[in-house]
Structure formats: structure tokens, C-alpha cells
Image (cartoon, rainbow, N blue to C red; front, side):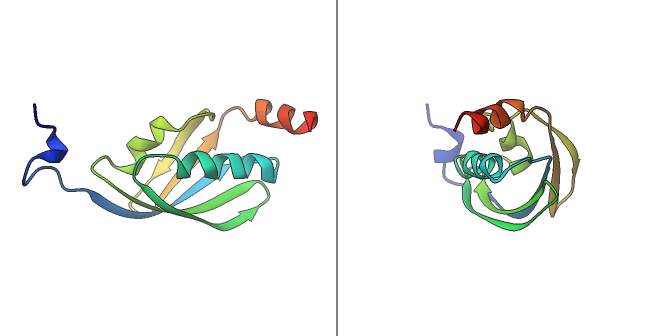
Length: 108
């Protein structure tokens, strides 16, 4: 069987340039782990920290895939989160549990 992506005239990838607004972060270690997890998602071509202030990260993400980034974020590993809001330019995310990351920092 031919996959949808392999058919001539099949699904067209979306090209998105979004900002993820994510909070709360309690350390740069947690921020770096989150950025790495986002970079590992299929379709993510680039990430850049735009701002990090008082535990809130503004992460610019370049993304290209047939599945919208808002859906692809369901594949994010190592973080539990809730989507607070979403529009064409920005996705706001609330991290639910950063306790494991904070505990890991204390071990180092």
C-alpha cells in the first residue's frame, strides 16, 4: 500500500513559524530539556529562544509537516502539559509537573 505522503498530489506539508509560550520553568536545565524535546519532534526544523523571563519561555519554532504543530506536540516526551490557548502565531502551554526535573537538578 502507498502511504498518503508518497502519493503524487498527496498531502501538502504545512510550513509554520510559531512561538511557544511555555511556563513555569524553574531552571535553565528544565528549559534546555524542553527545547531539546521540541527539537526532536518530527517536522521541527529550528528552534530559537526569543525570551526567558520569570519562568516563562518564548520559543520560536520553525515547523514543516502535514500534521499541525499543535497536534504534533502530543508526541512531546518527558513533559506533561496543558494547552492554554492557540492561534496562528502562538501556542501557550502550561507545564503540569516539573517536579521530576527539579529533583534531577538537585542530584547533580
